[in-house]
Image (cartoon, rainbow, N blue to C red; front, side):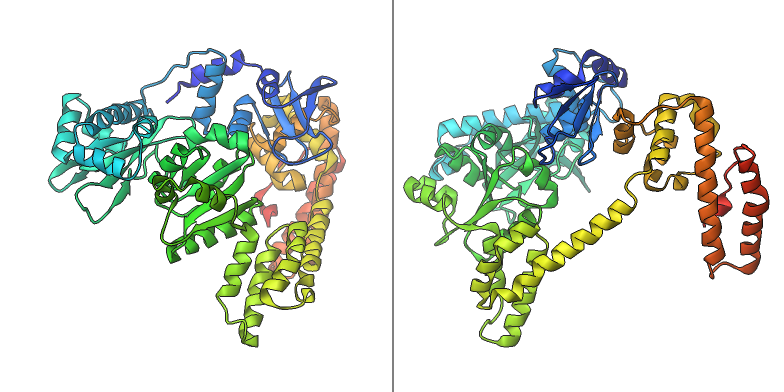
Length: 557
């Protein structure tokens, strides 16, 4: 674990304008800097960086934080990874504490085993011949650091020779504990090291050489390894993904290795799991178009359909390429059918078109009742997309299902009505300037927080309830708090003005509360009478005299 004091020293060592300015173009705007937000599309700059407060905030999408938060979001890195990246950029040496949360020992185990597995491969002709038979070159073996894990006994002996505590090896996911003690999870298998997006070893995949029932297995879930967030080959592919604005997602290790070998260096693969929502941040990085390169069998089609629905519903653009005749990318590279492979990968169906075709194929469209169900499912799917996108696919959908476009015309109308209603609801309670001023004053004068915490409740702040609650909890990295703090149009009050503003806001809240209590027919008569009397004869008179009244939990009803 990175030492907390070391992190604080790093924060003092870096400048947020320098950090963010190395990613996007910043322009001076008064005491701050502005830019078009890199996290959502916009034409008018609403992304603000404050050099004095060392924070950023986008008034369009609401994201905000410090330099570390920016790097995390922009690079799609974890908190420790972002810190380490910044430390590397600024030539800053981090210190690590040896606590229970320190996984440096587990990483060391993975690194040592990776090197050992790699050396073992040349000693195992069976494994080496298998790789060569699949068309994998020596250069690819070296590039992907492919290795071999011998018997469980040999793996355990190697770990013992290094005096590695077995609980640490278990934490790294390389051994497990059974009834007879510890044993190696991967044995007698060709080993494919798995790396994090920034190139750190986090686990292994293994292909059996002894006809084990499980042909492929991966490391188990650990603090370092989460297969639902990783893509095999990504650390080697990312440079090409960013450059080509395209990423090929396939199904296996060999597909990735062989595609890279053939020059398709933007190829990656899921790790024995379907594409999930947890993969999306990684796929979003660089905004590439997605090419789903899956087998054409029933399992591949099912996986492609699920992935296409997921990606299209989250605004990804891409295509589906299904490999025919039982072939896969690795087979085509091995047979040197590169021209056909290029042609195949450049074709396929667009994601949305593929989903619509698959929906149509799952119904008997010659039956009007079946057709109605199919069209209803297609409409539900299209309504989950953006208005412009769904409207653009209406002619295609009408052609696929053999119905007039009028059957899909309500999609856009209903969608527009839904978003319009949502916009109205948002506009009804977007901001309350008085509470923004109160919150900014409390941010600027933290000692005042203790004076008011018993006077006001977060629910009094209306649309800013979350921000006030975060302030009371000391959560200064809350995005709304950062937005209020960085907004130069929100003033900071003097203490006497703060008191006057607070009294007025609290008074207005109790007046509204009095009306709601009076109209509430579900309250017991005795409880309602007491609350009404309390507000009318005690709280409001004291507030009108300029006295701040302590908030009572009875009014949370």
